[in-house]
Structures are given as structure tokens and as C-alpha cells.
Image (cartoon, rainbow, N blue to C red; front, side, top):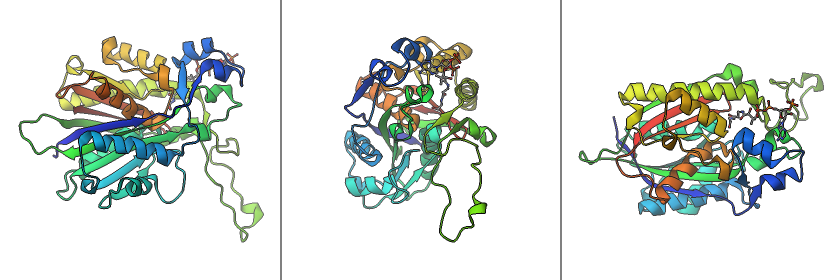
Length: 335
Ligand code: UT7
């Protein structure tokens, strides 16, 4: 098995900061409700930046932090549910912007679990001797699919991007590696979290053949979420998948420095911490400042820890995503 090492991290958060107070001026809500139910105080929203721009900046910062020549990047994977184009992929745009001319580029969508799925994918690709450096970027512009007249959802989401440059660790004396992953999907529960894309429609189609929406949701592209159902799913899979990777790796939670869960709700993070008997300082929670940025939330947090010198080489970290699909996944790695 290859040894995946994260050799650079980066993130990008738009300058525009929207506080709970600002949201309460456009929908019937309050700072008190949002803070106590979610832990969110403010979020960054795009000031106009498209998703590809945020992806490029986070990716560039990760590549620069690693001191890597963009021409040495063999693959770029971008995870997003909020691309700017059906084609080209954001990964191809990043390739052009960074001058990573030798990279294979594609996007993937595993919703809020995207970063963990991409890390697992990168680890598997690094078994190929022709692939040495993989840039994984998670970038989301959830403001594009948030209905700012729906208080149940618009208070939750934020925009931003995070990135890691992964390399094959060839040094036998260097412990950095991915130790275990656990991925899963529960498509039968997909209707709990839906944002639709374009419907089928062309001049040769019989009007009576228009299909009902599979999920029976609203006709626009905004996020629909049955919050309490997703909440229950989140606490279950977060707890189980963290335990799963610990068991697979034969490691005790006490020997893990951080669990970085997807930042969806501080109550989910706290409930899972209690179930796992995790120490408070092990659970990373930055949701107060960023809100829920879907797949970007984990690499955004990871970069903050690296930037603030709160993560050292040799530390064990578990990342855990959950969300639309429904999907979930955890990965345990040595930084
Ligand atoms: O990233 C993908 C994964 N996503 C998640 O994991 C999200 C999981 N779900 C959650 O985090 C929570 O379910 C939410 C934060 C979305 C909602 O919290 P909740 O405690 O489940 O609230 P609720 O939906 O049960 O609503 C409780 C009450 C309702 O009023 P009534 O019916 O009790 O009178 C809502 O209408 O709160 C009301 N409400 C609000 N009130 C003020 C809903 N949104 C708001 C709001 N401000 N923004």
C-alpha cells in the first residue's frame, strides 16, 4: 500500500462576512436561534467569486506551501456540489490557472463527504507508480443554491474552499501515511437532502412525457433539507465511521490528536464527541466562523490547524464527512 502524505495545505474564504444579525434582517430568525441551534455566528459568502476562483486560490496556496512545481502535479480532483459549468470541470480550470499541464483533471460529487472520498481516491491512485502528486480541492459556493427567503436553510451555509497536496511518501523513516478509510452511501435516504439540476426538456419531447421530480421537491435549484432526519443520520455515521477507522487501524481514540468532522452543526459535533468519549480538545469545531461549507469544511479546518501551528508531523488525525446522497466517510491519517 502506498503512503499518502499531505505535503501542503491551503484555503480560501471570501472577504464578505455575513453575521447572524445581518441574516436576521432579511428572514425571520435571530442570532439567539442560529447560535443555540447550530453554533454558527457568521459565515463567509461569495462577494461574486465563482467556485472555480476559490478552488484555484486554495489549490495554489497548497501547492506553494509544499514548494511543488505545478508541472509535477499528476492529478487534480475537485469536489463540489456547486460547480460553475457542466463542462469544463473546475479541476480543468484549476489546471489552466496553475499551469499544471501534466495533470489528469476531474471533479467529483459526494456532497459533504466529498473531501474524504477524494482523499481515499488519492490514496488508491498513489499506488500507481506514474502518479506521484495529487492536488485535492474542495470548493463550494452554497450561496448559489441557498434560498434566502427560507430561514430553515439559508442561515446554515457558507462559501469557501480548502485544498491539500498529497504525495507518495517514499521515505521509510517518515511515518506520514493514510492508515484507514471507511466510506458509505445510503441512497435510499437521498430525499432528505436535495438540490435539483436542470430538467429534461427539448423540442422533440412529448409534453405528457415530463416526469415528476424523483423526490417530489420544489421545482427550483435550492437546497431542501429535512434537518432532523439528516441530524440523526449525521450523529450515527459520524460516531460509527470514526470507530470503524480506529478499529481498522488498531488505534485507540486517546492516541488521536484531532477529529475533524464535517462542520454542519456544533450539536452534531458535541453529541458525537459524547458518544465516542472524545476529549473536547480532540474535536475540531470552527463552525462559528464559517457555517456549513459542505465538502470544503474539513480541508478549511485542516489548513487552519496547520497555519496556526496546532498540528505537528506525526500527529494522528481523523477526518469525517457526512451529508447529501446520503453519503459518509472517515479517514485516519498520520500528518
Ligand atoms: O451538510 C449536510 C449535513 N447537514 C446536517 O447535518 C444538518 C443536520 N440538521 C441540523 O443541523 C438541524 O436539524 C437544523 C439546524 C437544520 C435545524 O435544527 P432543529 O433543532 O432540527 O430545528 P427544527 O428544524 O426542528 O425547527 C425547530 C423550530 C421550528 O419551529 P416550530 O415548528 O417548532 O414552531 C422551525 O420553524 O425552529 C423553527 N426554525 C427557525 N426559527 C428561527 C427553523 N429555522 C429557524 C430559524 N430561525 N432560522
